[in-house]
Length: 245
Image (cartoon, rainbow, N blue to C red; front, side, top):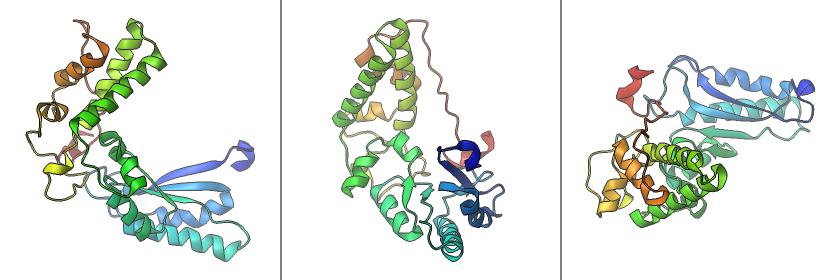
């Protein structure tokens, strides 16, 4: 494969397997080095599982061992293939505990970053951030500014920015402020109904798309009367949504 790609590195991402309860990724690990794979990411779930269960970081550790043993035993002069893990990282504690437990070289963050874009600050500073509603609003302001800089400030650019802005809020609205929780949340926990510590915090937690449009109007002006928003992303974020695809 690398011969076809030339100087372009070959990287792959795999799940633990296809069907729930039948992990197969560890069988693939010894084959990666002969294929010329430069890096691999292991998502700790099967395809069938979706988000109905927590990611299996113990199995990720098993895959790390299988790859490390294959490279070490067969070709000691080669550097190890970087291995990244992924699944359910929602706090700095999740990141650092899973990194140590699994032996991966790094961790990919997906949903956690969509819900909490500030998670990378938490990880780099090794702390949990009880971010205020004003700080979150300032991040949304920057998001809108980036959109206008990229797509332009004409009608089409504003409408495109508004659509991405509302899409971002469809995830960020799932965040429950750390300061009102009794313990660190898990990403698969369905957020309970709650009243924020101020009106803005409550508004940011709204699951009503019209409220997301209202928030967009703070930075982008009134939305056109004919403009409507329907979330594009339909992933099964919670266990009881598993039958929806």
